[in-house]
Each structure stands twice: as structure tokens, then as C-alpha cells.
Length: 135
Image (cartoon, rainbow, N blue to C red; front, side, top):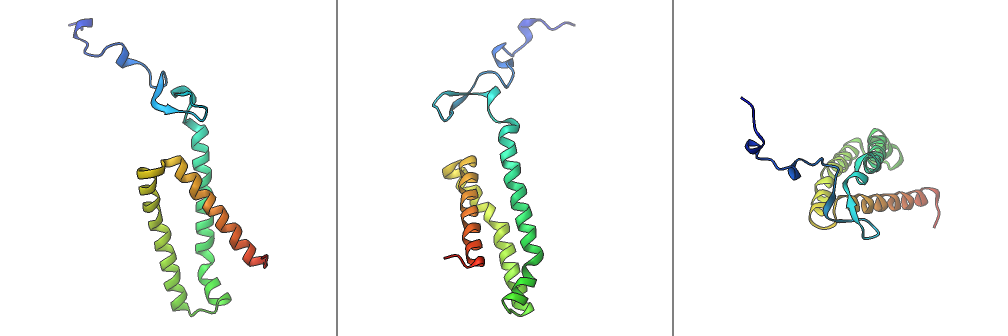
């Protein structure tokens, strides 16, 4: 039994590829409509992957050395240092929930990542100045 064109409930417009057309309501930085074929993809994903890699390297670099730093450099007891490391780890694990709610409710995902990255970089620069004694 052959299926005729009249049996097909899909119109030709509903079968267009996903990369054709524009993104509804989205404009680029010049105010032009965003074309699906020219937006997103690996160009945008490379930024997100790079930020995530940097964050993971810094997190695990700190996590591996934090108890040693707290006990030897700051003179904390092992129990106090372990308590502080657990608090730091828990905070680091829960902050993405705050970031996700801010991104979903107010800023959008890319703007949130850029702002959080800038805050993180400025925080690191401030910490490095304190380490080398720059005022």
C-alpha cells in the first residue's frame, strides 16, 4: 500500500532543516537577525570548554594542596584544616546552583559565564598581588 501526498500530515515548511532560517527574536551584536547556520556550534562551544577546563584545573590544583597549605603555612590543626577544606569543597559544589538560577532568571547563560569568569580573574589577580606583596 503506497502512501499518497494527501496522507502526509507534514507540510513542506515543517520539514525544513534546522540550520535554515533565523532564530526567533535573537539578534547579534550589530542588531541583525541571527542565522542558525552562522551561530553556535564549535565556535561557541570552544569558549565554554576552555572555561570549564581552566576551572577544573584550578579546582583540583587547590584541592590537592589545601590541607597542606592550611596546616603548614597557616598553622591550623589537621582537624580545623579538614573542616575548612570540607566547607570550601561544599561551597564550590553548590555555587553552580546559584549561577544557574542567575543565568536562567536574569542574565542568560553566556553573559553569566563571561561575568563569572571576569570576577574569577579579578579575584585571582587580587590574590596574586597579596602573595607577592604588591599594594
